[in-house]
Image (cartoon, rainbow, N blue to C red; front, side):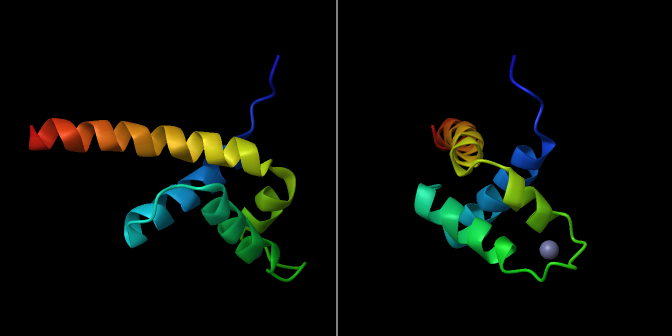
Length: 81
Ligand SMILES: [Zn+2]
């Protein structure tokens, strides 16, 4: 059974928000970019997101953010139709 990973959801949200802001697609490059920025925080940082980035798998973040991106895309197409 897969363990519940709140850190993945939190990071996927950051990736998703960034892709929405910039109009980029959710890609592994974007995930790695966001994760690397978080990993650059100082060790004493208490924001929580950088600790999550050190634990979460990039692949899991990517799959979660991409699922959200798809559901938003479907909604947009429905609005335009
Ligand atoms: Zn931090």
